[in-house]
Length: 533
Image (tube, rainbow, N blue to C red; front, side, top):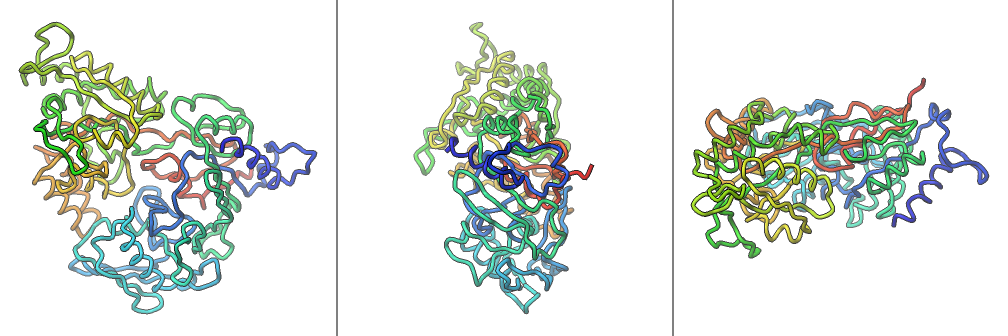
């Protein structure tokens, strides 16, 4: 696969720059001023371009239009919708859509397409959660009425990710051959190699300055090599590679809520197993004082500097920097307090081996990470080294995800999350989601108090009201999911998304990125532009 990528890029560069066979394919920086094309290297290939099955989940789908869309500060603005209203009981949303939106096959987009899209997404039961939607009905060509089974404050977040598909042209292979009404349209998809887009000349919004886009799928090492060869304009990289200086490029460290931290089983090992047969519980991490001691002992800034080369921030929750984050979750590194927590809890190094113990039980456990993820490995090992200073032994081990699914209810996992929707908080901490095979709550956290706040947040009628409850989920002054509370997670770092950008190209005002190295970058693609200077 890798052997084919660079020839494709070279051919593409030739075509875009108008080179003849005898001319160099490397882009001439003096010609960049007039360019209207970009080549982007990312590491993750989408599984589909069908929004009803997850394309655009948490981001803008670019090929399709959405009813509303995120702004850079994660509020909402109209896209296809020109107006919307919510009934007093929070159950009925009425959207009025614009009448000048057309699919790229020339057919007009109507309210019936909106209703069809939402009903199809609900039936698909993919990453788009519409289980709370009762029905979506087109009242007329420009009015769609959506009825929910219960008030749901995250509904606008969901709609901002669900691109509208054409009922008349939807089929099983739509995800590979999408027709939409967004700012771009698909030209070609070569699986495991590249996606090619071009600007939609009939787009109702402002025409993108970048007309032609090629997204190539490369490992970070290969992407950096392509940058050094001048063959791509934008490339995702890593914290370890982002310090490499490349003439003609600059590095943009895009803030994210793409976090890394330990999940710590909160239940003891009573010999129980999950539905998949995996053991449940850990007799070390089930002790609250030990989990909290881990949280206070870790020097997050030191890990950001040493492991991430400064490309990151300390993490204190699953949603740092988001409007629904509770700033009270921030805690300062305090090794002395961590040691006091252990001592007060009955943990002591009675045999002098450097590991504290309680009732004959050593403070030692395994923490697994997906093999091949060097960043998670390095973060885990750095944290483990710090924890040895307070007498806790954490053994960092690589496993496949299949193997992790068999141990994640009984061992710590170096997990990563981060989303542009508070829906993630709901799934991470709801009691009914504990110990399922979806990776959200493998630690088995359950709390009636938290469930009450989660339900209130979901059923709030305004984002502002919902945010108050989302914050209380984390910490209400006495309890919560925060590390000074029940501490089912020990959050460590938020990764910057390290991105090489060719000088002269603006990638716009990037909103804070969620989890995932790749697609969050292009959600504002229509704002990108080459400099005129």
